[in-house]
Length: 289
Ligand code: BG6
Image (cartoon, rainbow, N blue to C red; front, side, top):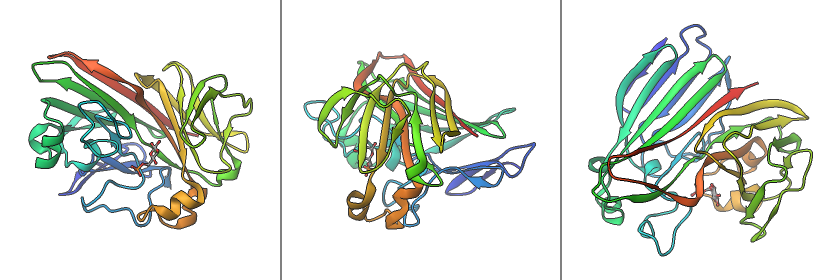
């Protein structure tokens, strides 16, 4: 019950329901497991590296300060998705009992020499993970500028949801939204009226309002609802399908794409700016149905 800390991870168990828990690996502050009533709700590759040698394939990796890879920007030297998911965070402690909450922090002194050379800004990241209910998990990432000049960044909760069967699943709330489609290499407005379905490789960024509800349904029944969105106007929908999954060494089983869908909320379509001394925060609540 409560909060259990080891050298490598921290686990929160819901005080009123011990079959609900969340585990956060200190490497990347990656949520690697979220169990609701004993049922795992996140997809984690069976060959995900959990030893700090590579970003975790699954769970909720954190993207900061750049989504994808940038060109002509001060983050351009950084690898895809930045360094937050490949740095070891510090557990700052339990900040609330009800709801059960822990906070992790990352600052320049915890970055690798290489990452520090690639992006030399002074910053503090605070990651707050909360079991807001027996069926809900809230994640909040706060970016504080401790530098002398403004800096620009992207943020994303790269959530891999575990789903029963990708052929039955749809993402609701995206109809009529503008899409940047990285597979088709085109921009268009989403026309589907019964949800976004996956029947091949999908890699899209939808422009939404943070107030729009986003739900994942299976056979028309909601299985996850994402609420409490703050500064998360972009919704990335990603499924690697066959060829891409085959090309990812740490993606296993190779047909695991049938049991996962990434629905990633954040701020990635443009860089946001935070002034010296200021803070900016993105937040989401995942509700299991
Ligand atoms: C998604 C991107 O967010 O992450 C995809 O939209 C990318 O383009 C995917 O392939 C996985 O990225 P990575 O770096 O974890 O293999």
